Length: 171
Length: 171
DNA sequence: GGATGGTTACTCGGATAGGAGGTGTCCGAGTTCTAAGGG
DNA sequence: CCCTTAGAACTCGGACACCTCCTATCCGAGTAACCATCC
Image (cartoon, rainbow over all chains, first blue to last red):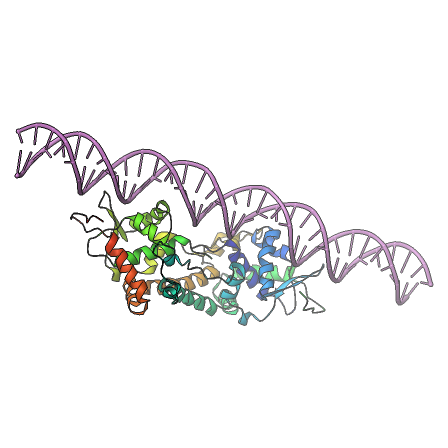
């Protein structure tokens, strides 16, 4: 069980975007430099967030990325599912009916108990992720985070954000 | 986010072993054939369970595998951690301090808020997995599972289990 | 007939190739700003 | 002086290699049962 590293980068980027002004955008290259990753690689994950309806992308010299909706309405679950895909971590391969002792298909009508148990646990995981909202994490960072780190983040946002004059919802 | 397929096989094997008599063992080859997987491959995962103290292995012609402790004391979490490793799914790479805007190390003394949030969710996941005990899953299978499937499992166990310190019944 | 030593066959265990998915990088399509040229 | 238009620069987007980890497999070490032999 391992989450891809892109999840971490995606969450960090989302938190940066939360701190921007309304309608402003930030280029992916600025985010990539801030976190020391390749811009082309980061774009790959940011595109997944755009496809999921969490981010919006604006092309052109003044373009970039921004949140598609309020930070209160974005949870860590949304980001994780956008990057990792909606499939559950546990996929039942139905190995119970792969052996030589074949039974009629009707004997396997009920779902596998193992699969049910694993999905129960995974539902708890997703519920916990859904409870972690971006707005809460940002608020916690601003109040309990190191003041120097908070100040540095504000400086970075103010330096690289680009106020958008005409809002285009085209993607 | 994807769990390895070995987890599914390991859980199935564990449930089979629950149905055996006290002290009896079952060869890995029988389990592999039952689930249609390569025995050499299955052994790899079973060894992980042995190393974790969940299974016990007995060498020799009458050897095989058996549970190391009562089914009530084995949870799905134990099996998942044994196969997948104890590391959490989310590993914080500390990309917050990888950018060009370096701050003194003291600014990063407090743990990353993102990491804390992800680990909170993962603790919920593990707690849910720990609540799923083998004994409960077996009981649910026996009462709510398809009768034909339950009977087939009992036949399989009776056919392949080998009582310890006794003459093996010739088949 | 009983004990004993050697043989056999079966088991687990670790070391070894193959393949899928994630990681990292490149170049191209599209859009907006800029600036020069003409009316 | 103002409008038009061509150019250029910056942005995102998709397509292409590389690398790590999981999957799958082989052969060797060890052990208990079996059997022939000896007492």
